[in-house]
Length: 147
Image (cartoon, rainbow, N blue to C red; front, side, top):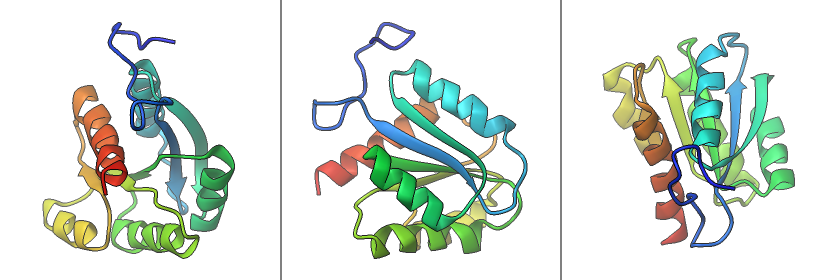
């Protein structure tokens, strides 16, 4: 399989294509942006597991274990990012997994350092380009692999 643009597939340590689990954590019902991200990542050659709306941290961790995920992508649009994103990072750590968490959505600039300090690998705001999305995800995985 090649990505839509004909480039080489993004892989983990030169092996399998990166597998990303995408979800909406909590009660946020806005999923259009996450569906666009899913398609963007798929078109770039990543394997996408789309969990959809109203997921819990535990359900996302379980899916990551079942799907052998390399990275988690969360979409935040309901102002719950300062509570939910750190909770997701903690659930991943509690499960003994080494999976970076990338979030995107409506996140005030001032909250980005707080999220990064809480262990979030990358934060993307509204209007992030396809290249920025793919880069944030692949770089989060690359940082994990080289640790």
